[in-house]
Length: 387
Image (cartoon, rainbow, N blue to C red; front, side, top):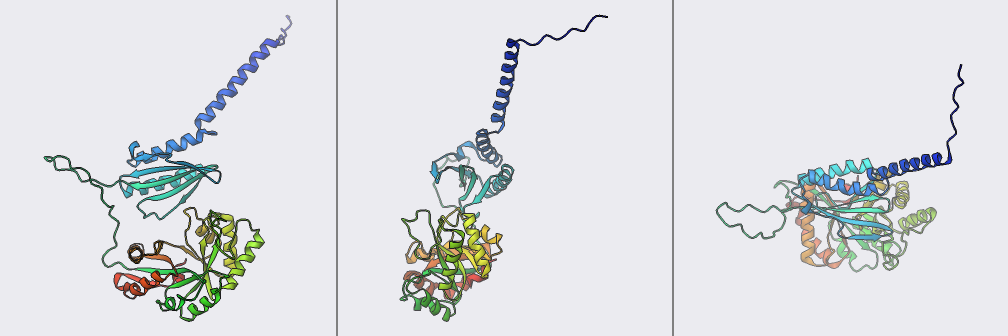
């Protein structure tokens, strides 16, 4: 019976071939991974997916302005995209698509302003990169008659949605920055009692202003100073919540500020574009407000705010500012903003407007508020609109 042949051991050159083939297999697999979505390949896939989702909603390439501009903010590359949709229905559909896409990719999607705005801003955060998406609407241009030469398009204002003729809504007004002096307090106290006042802590007339306005029947809120993005160049004032604080320091600061303002039933932020964008810090603040059964109204000094999310997570009653009354300290401008608040409360049901303890603002409100119910707006206290 013949003996079985013994396999010859592989030579060095054969082993070298095996190693080379193995290395090539690993290299090809790595390239496939990158192309299919690993590493930086995901970036290309997300860009392509945004274009695909927009195209599915009727948006052509000419209506997309990508990476205009790209900027770096706090170590994050922010890429600005403008996408113009043919109508609101298409844009609303894209928003739903984007929520599903964000959830699938486990990215953070934040709505930067109200969904009813003419341009909706969203932020899609992904590690060290973020997409600042600005979703606009294309204005419809009426078709020219078949026999006439095409007219030159003339830009016109976008038609805003209007409430029904018999629509009514609830409007709350909160005036803040109170506490520096008392000269405007008597006139402010004479405003309708539904108007609330937010008072800065540790100012010369903080407690005295709170007592006077509370005595006249108004709600008192703490206007809590918080660190803005450009701190310390822009200083929020005494008693401010700073990002550098430890948990214990922050808790003490919140309670000290509340103790400084008698009769306060809730808080809204003074400045705070940096603090209100930080979920951990805002969660600590909300824990302290929950202990004292306080509400929170987000002044929305940044589109990146997470204040309402933090409040909801801790069971704190909350809402947001929808309209600023007096960014321009001008009578005509304040009247326009008040009219906008009336329109929106009738359209959306409830609106909070925020202004300042300013002479022009007080004068306009004193003139306009007595007749505001006839325009379809029921004036209520700010505490009535927190949920």
